[in-house]
Image (tube, rainbow over all chains, first blue to last red; front, side, top):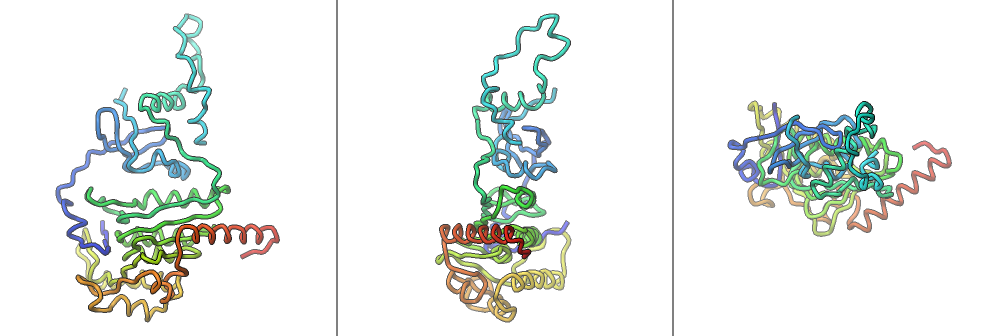
Length: 75
Length: 261
């Protein structure tokens, strides 16, 4: 994977802590939409990104990345 | 489609009746699956936030912070994720109720390929688009700013134009100078094809020395961006909205008279 980053602020500021980033992401479904979520507290997670093929799901502000959604334990 | 989350009658639906032998076999309510759990989710979370489906014919997208592409940036960065913007633009193109798009930019730059992808999507939308640069539209924000049908910049906003081959940071496989040079050419070509600025002027701004403290290049302020032909007009929110509505009216009347653009 190649990514070319080009910004008006110094790369050392942008990428500070990059090496030590850890991800605790899970895949879940909320409102019928599959999504990647980062658990932030007991039973709730923050949307990382949607996995839906339906473009209208991306217009739903309550599912935008950063939104808080409920998480349920697997049954 | 989002209306199904909003049925007021169902919010007050009483809990299912205690099971009696007769009602066990067929479930009492048909779509138990998604709809009811959704309502429960909302209730248990205390959130009633649902997609705003107001009758606005304009869709507004703000592109702020860093443009995040192939790599997730550390949490000190505020980012706009391109994988969320792209399907939004698809939905905008497909939805007949949306007649125009307003993009508000205040970005420091970010992933070159993600930025170019957003810029290409905007420029190929069949609906009128207006960009408004507020604060800053730097680096890879420049092609996004010029991608629309008509662009505005606030008088106080700036755009940093500087060379990728010196300031770009490649993450992943080490890349050659030629690779960076090629990426820079892609950006220059896009900007000069989608604005009135000449290639010579853009290259000149990009390679100016002494203007930026840490870098070569130029910080172009509002009026200069218009004078160089990079941006169409100085303006704010009201101007941008007025222009967008005007273009929407124009498109409507063209459609009515059967004129094909």
